[in-house]
Structure formats: C-alpha cells, structure tokens
Image (cartoon, rainbow, N blue to C red; front, side):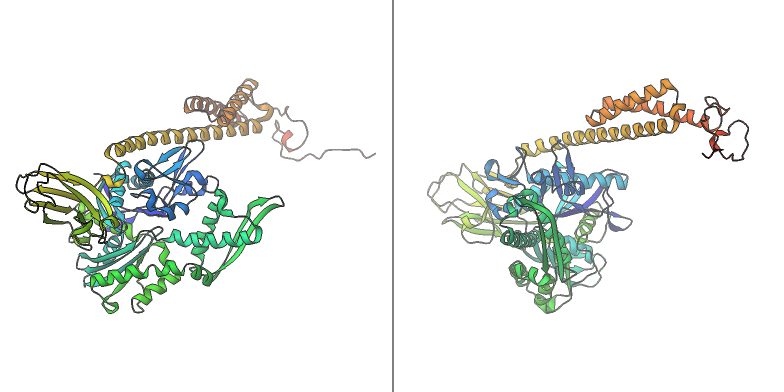
Length: 638
C-alpha cells in the first residue's frame, strides 16, 4: 500500500515525516540529512539540481539557482517588490501579471520550483521506506490566502502527489505537541520561518486540537533578517572601498550565505567574524571583506523586524479573547525563533513565560503533518483537528464595499449563505466579485474570483432573491455559488484560478516534470556510466604499470588503446551507448591482466621461473633455487 506522508514545504528548508510504529518520525533524505534545502538549480549543461547539491553551487551560478520560492507562490508580481529585490536571480512579470523566475530565457512558475523540492522529498522517502510515496499532507503558513494555498496544492500535483490535505503550520506544530496531552492547555504557537510569520492560539488536549485564532505577516521572515545584515556589510564595504557588492550577483550570493551563517552564530555568541577573501577586485587588485558583527549591532539593525511580530500576536490574543495569564505553553516554530531578540519579545508578550523547548522547531511541523496524514488514512485514532480560516471572505456590494459572509477565525470546514438582491429595476444579471481581506472598501481587498449570474426574471430592484453560498472545505479551498430563488438558476465558481495557473498549465507542468524526471535519470545514468568507465580505465593502467614488461605485448597494446578511448569518452562526456561497450571491453582486459598477474605471483605459466628476467643479484634475482640467503654484491675500490 502506498504511504501517506507529512511535508513541511519551507522557505529555506523542507522536511518529510511519516507515521510508523505508532509515532511520527522524520525521514532522512538521500544525503542522510533530516532537512532538505528548498533550492533548485539549473546548470549550464542543462542539469537540474535539487537540495544540498543546488545550494553548494549557488555562488558560481547565482542567476540559475532559485531559493525562497515559497515567498512568490500564488502571488502577482506587484505584490512582491521587496522579495524580488532580496534575491540574486531574476524575478519578472509573467502572463497576467503573475510572478515568474527567469533562468536562461525560460520562465518558471514558483509552483514548478516547489514541485521539484516536493518530488525530491517524496523520491528519497520512497527509497528509505521501501514503498512508493504518492499521498501527502502539505503544510502552509496560517496566513496564506486562498491563492497561495491552491498554488501549493498545484505544486503537489505537479510533483505527482495526491495532496490529501493542506493544513496550517502552527496547527501542525500544536498537533505534534498535543498528541499525548491529556489535560486541556491553551497554547500559543509562534512560527517565524524563512519567509513568513504566523501566530496561532489553540486549545489542545484529550486528542482535540482546536484553533481559536490566527494572525500573521506573510511578508516577514528570516530572509529579511539576512537582508539587513547583507546591507550592513555591503554599506561598510562600500564606504571603505567605493564598490557596491550588491551589484555583483556572485558577490551578493556570497554575502547572503555569510549573513545567514553570521545570524545563526549570533544566536549562541555575542560577536562573530565575517571573512570573505577575494570578494571583488578593482584596478589596484583583489579586495577582501573582513568585518566583525556584534549581537547588539544585529539587534539594532533588525529591531523594527522584531517589533513587526508584536501586532499579529496581540491581534491573535484579542481575537481568541485570552490574556497573558491564560496561556499555558508557548511553542516556538521555525529557525528564526532561535534569535535571542525574538525569544525576548515572546517572553515580553506572554508575561515572562519561558518558551517550551521540548519540540524541535525545524521538524515539529512535518511531524504534525505526518500525524494528520495518519488520521486521514485511518492509522491514527481519537485525534480531531479543528482549524480556522485566517482571513474574512465576502462579496462586493453596492457602493464598492465588502460585505463579509465568513468572518476570519471561523472554524472550517464551514458553509454560510446570505441573501442579496438587485440594485436596478429589471436587472438581467448580477456580478459576483469574491473578496478576501479585512478592509471595508472592496478595492483594498484581494479579488479571488468573479462570475455572473444571468437570466434573472425582470422585476423592480430589491425584489429578486439571490442566495450567495460560501463553502470552505477542510483544505481551506473556497467554493462560491449564487442562486436565483425565483428561477432556480444557479452559477458557481471554485476559487482555483487565483493560484495563477489554469488547469491546462498545471497539466503541462505535470507532463514536463515527468519528462524532466526521465531526462534527469538519463543524465544521472550517463554520469554514473562515465565514472565507472574512468574507474576501470584507471585499474587497467595500474595493472599494466605493475606488470611492466611481463604483460603480454598484444594485451598491453589492446589495453592502452582502450584506455585512450575511455579517456576521450570521459572528456567528451559521451553517451551511455558509447561508454558501456568500452567499459565491458576494459573489464575483460582487466580480468585477463589480473589472471596473468596471479599466475606470475604463484610461479605458474606465463612467468620465467629460472629468474632469468632479473637483472641483478639482489633479493628478487634468486628465483630458481629457492635459496633465502642474501648475496652481497662485490666491488673493487680504485
């Protein structure tokens, strides 16, 4: 039976976990690591790298290495100006104003990049578990809107996965934490990841995880802290040398990696050294960047980012109607919560309460997703998850205002119906504009979709009764229907086009992913075959050197010719059809040389047993008689 897994698709790193043996556990990737960098690279040779391999070559390939794709998924280009400036690769406006990544004149959707990460996680887990992974529960930030949720589901589909459920990251964390809790607790989950910030208040205990409120900022994350450090280091270097490193993609990539490392180190030490030799050069020669960064300096340049966490926490507490004293536990999720200033803010907001350190902030979300996967597959009993919708949903009504039908923090799944009427006499149709957000003016909220209900019976304004029904499923995906009570005419929409991909585009990406999978596999086979050929050629060369003149002349000539061909094939990156026959022939030659060498060592055929081949009277020259005495050479002194 195919395995269902839980996946934390993160901005910086991703994790996959599975429910096995009565508990959730993280599945390591093929490199043996429990976390996989959410990085995809396209090399000059056309190879596609994912994870640690992609991250390692980022400095030499800054324009072809895509990271932090989660910050762009399901978004339009005009929504992400700050995020686009913070990366070394090119973010451009695609068809319909959507955000796209441009690599070597080809456009990639964020969903495609995320799908590559998901596929690596699933493929590696399949090898580890010994059975194919085809179903997954994928987590998203609680404050992701409908478009971002649907886009994440599309990424799963492109990766060849059936997405059983999309759940909120703080909810998954609380699920992992509260799995074995018998007593009821009010838990605050503070989730500051690489690209998003969420906070949720939940009631946990006795197998029930109920979300009471959620809030967040989907434009705030660890990447922003890195950017501040990059700007600080680049400004210092510019003052000293007059060169702006941010204009050089390779130097910028090195700066980002150094900033991330320094940020991590400053969580445990009060001062760290940033050293980047040969970062750039001018007419006077190479330039080196060496700078000391103190924790106090880092806290000063990022203080406004830390303070931005304040509003969502206060809003979530107000929505849940809880105070500092009502919170029993604080769970920190995401690598950025290791920053001391962030932990100090959490203590300040919760009346000095120490965060619960019993959970791993990098893994707890994936573990919770694995539990939910177990629940959906019937492997986990007596666990109930009650999540909420993070933003209000409604329609545009006369005067350009938003009329809310489902308020934020409503438990899902949910179905609500409101009745509206026409604004003009004999109006034949009504436009239904579906909105998401908290603003009163319709134009200030996000338009999720629009459709038209036609063939309304002519009547004075206010008389027709139009029922509008909003239905949110357990994944947080919205369906909207409008029905004319009088005629029974009905029209509906599933808010999926807001994912920035139509169905045809998703199908194209699924097929392309399959094609690329085959190409990547063929590329890997060719590389492995060339490596094997190179290794066999080396072994043949070594045997020839060991045998020397004792090697039969005809075999030696054939071996040298094949080794020469092998070296040429490796250098020219020849295909499998040329490499494998060469490998086979060399292996036969190697077997013959090994046999010949073995026979020589035991005094068998093919070896001159009289010792006539020796050129001196040393130890190796006493072959025939078996005399072990050492004969000293005689010499005459002039």
